[in-house]
Image (cartoon, rainbow, N blue to C red):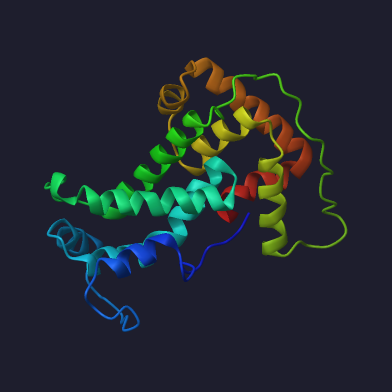
Length: 218
């Protein structure tokens, strides 16, 4: 799973920003304003605020989208389109936000789910057999954190698609079973069953120790 650190140069959104601003884009200095003040400026029609919010949150929001759609290009598209939509609808959102970061995360999550629905990629077959992967040999030598993270993400990605999606929404996005059931149009009992399956496979693949510690490494 890719790690995003900076918005890539030449993205469609940066092009969109540059086409709609009158300031020199190369002259980007550190901005110490809070997200909430920037969002208020964005609502007032200041493109520089959109630019700064994009640069601050693009990487982390791409990670959120990627967990849902499991495709780097699609994740980038979802996040870029989110910021374009926020800019285009800025005059319709006049209420001040108490916290911008959670709002952007929820919006990314919702857009990702809508994208999966539109693509008819929310799975309905709960009996799919997962790909078998080898459990790590923990007796050989301690794993570096990067290796451990890679093995954890690899195991999650190997889960059956519906199982993976439910697990990501529960343990990474911290959604309740009720919220997941509503988002995926399934019953809370089905969510519970999918979580049980996910834990069973991950315990087999990762071992008990890795399963206990995986949360802090995601």
